[in-house]
Length: 367
Ligand code: 0XW
Ligand code: MG
Image (cartoon, rainbow, N blue to C red; front, side, top):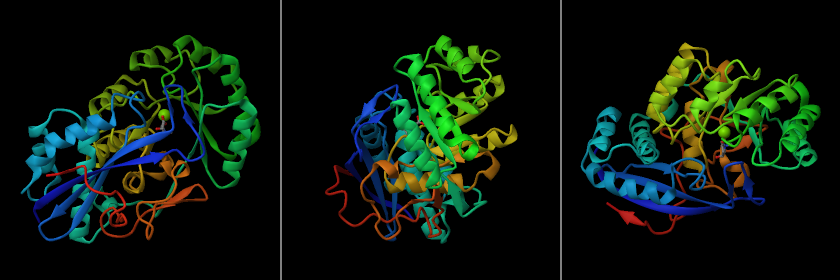
C-alpha cells in the first residue's frame, strides 16, 4: 500500500457555551488542520492537529499547515508498512515540528490498522480496557460557580476534575480550590492547573493555604526549572504539562525526579508512536499521566482514546477530549463520545473514525 495523494483541510471549531478561559489564554474558536492520506488501494487514513490558540505553547495552526506543506510532497509514493521508516522520511523533510508530524503519524496508523483489520490500540501495544476514564476541565471562573459545575460534572460520572486557576489574585484561586473540594470531596480526583501562570512564590502560598486538600498541581509555573525549585517546598504532587515538549524533556523530568506525573498531549509529543515511548518510561517509574490533546475533533479524540486504552488503568489520569466544548461530530455514525465521564474505545479497524464526506469542504492543499 503506497501513498497516492494527501489532502489537507482546515475547519473552524467554535467553542460551545462561550469562551474557554485559561491562565495562558482565552479562546473562542479553534483552527483545526486535517490530513487525509489516500492510498493506492483506495483506503484513506486521517490525522488531525489543533493547537488551542497560538500562545498556549509554541504551536499555531498556520505553523502546522506550513510544516505539513514541507513534509507532504516527500511522502507521495512511500510504502505504508513501517511507521518507523515513514517517521524517518518525515525527519528528512523537516526538523522538529512534531505537532504537525503527529497528524501524519495518526493517518499512517489509521491506514495500517485498516489494512491489517485491527484497531489502532492494537498497533500501540494492545488495549487493557474497552472504556477509558475522561476528566472535566473547569475553566478559570468564580469560586461558587465553578464549584456548582464541579458537583454537576461529578454527578454525571466524571471520576476526575481539572480546576483551572492563575492569572488573577491568589485569594480567588484559593477560594475556588476550597469550594470545589467542599462540593465534591473524595468523589472525584482533583488536578489544579496553573497553565504556567503562577510564580513559584504564589504556588507555594496556594499549596500552604490548601494544605489538607488532596489535589495534584498541574503545570503551576512557566518553566521546568521553576517546577524544579518547588521540589521539597510544596506538599502537593507536581505534574508537568506544557513543559513536556518532546520525549527528551520527559526523560529529563523523570530522571531529575521533578515530576510526579504528566498531562501529556499527543500532538505535542510528536504523535501516537512517540507517545508510546513516554508511556513506557512512565510505566517504569509508576508515574501517572493523561492522554489528551490541546483541542481537536473526533480524529484527535480517537487517537487519545486508543492510546489511553493501552495505559495501565491505575496510572491513567484520563483522556481529555474537546467534545464538551464542540458542537457536533466529524463522524456521525461512530463518534467519540463521553458517557458518564468515560469513553468507549473504538473497536473498528484503524482509528475507527470516518468523517462525513465533504464535511471539511474543499482541501486547502493537495499533494
Ligand atoms: C484541559 N486541556 C487538556 C485542554 C486545553 O487545551 C488545556 C489543556 C490543559 O490541561 O492544559
Ligand atoms: Mg494542563
